[in-house]
Length: 213
Image 1 (tube, helix red, strand yellow):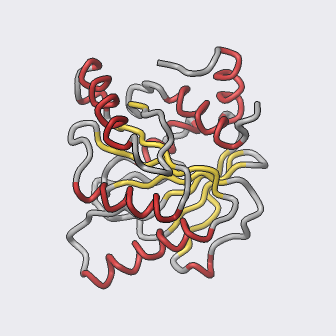
Image 2 (image 1 turned 60 degrees about the vertical axis):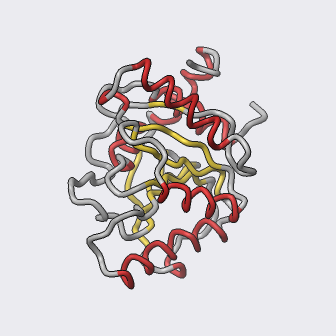
């Protein structure tokens, strides 16, 4: 399903093979690092697999802390790859086990990041392949469209369903978002556990950083 030639995919692999490290977690908008490097951000429902996907992209098992406890990510977490790329893990949404005040606090932090980050190149909205788009995802899509930030939908945990189902869901999802103004017109299905289409996602990120190459 690759949209890129082998040389581009290899260049993207090399880019993500560089040293990666956790930089910081910001609990307040004023704690965000200076917008001095290109960033791509990952958003999605709690327990959708954001941490696992970030780890798969950089080839490390424990860079981003994965948890079986939904809603653990309540800060905007920053990871740096090499000298010129930051990956950003946004607070998960759709988590019902926190107070409404607490949920609103860290979700507003994510929205504030999206609306004011001039160096943000693209947001990757992760959707669990087993469930597809839900009503709560619609709220996230609306927020992204309102922020006018380019975003791309990525289906996660595709190893939990059949490849033909993943392909069909990707096509169905693309159709569902086709009229949304900020949606990028490609949907990927991935598996962090199996490594499926991780190389394609790396290439998509490289393209988002510099679409002229």
